[in-house]
Length: 230
Image (cartoon, rainbow, N blue to C red; front, side, top):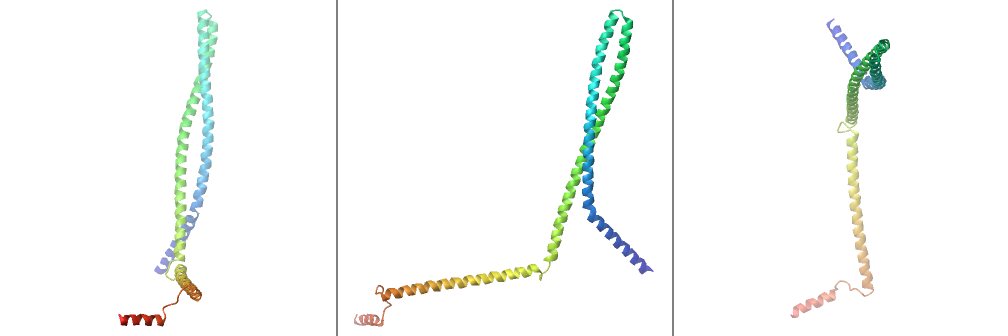
């Protein structure tokens, strides 16, 4: 029973390793898809930011316009009071109350849009940093994976003294030696050819009487006789 339990445990461990291997194999593909999704969401966030900025500008514009109208109708109310026309001044005051309500609403909208823009800008900025860091890490992992695969292939192909690489190097040495031998033979032939050419030229000169041959026996005997008499 103990052996059976150990076998089951080993089998489970092997299954887990296979599962992790499959997950690791697909990890880069999953990360690439996650990056593409994040880029798309980032693009949508920037579009939302542009819309909120547009609404903020419109709200700021309305705040300015209502403030100008409030100032305008306040002057009308003062003039009505100066003319002792309280009924007209009251109508102007009612208009002012409406304008002030509108002004407060636009002011709240503008403030809300401003805060939303601030938060969204921060989120976009942090998201861009995260995506950039993730891309860099994926690039490093991909580069490392490629290098390790190349190293593994080289190690498998050229990993021993009797491998194809060693055989090729041995062949290269033999080729170099043959080339050196051939070069030496060619040099010797060239020297022989030059010597034959010089001998042939000397023979032609001697036949033409232009160049004398080597000293003959008569000349040597005459020289020896001169030594005896001296």
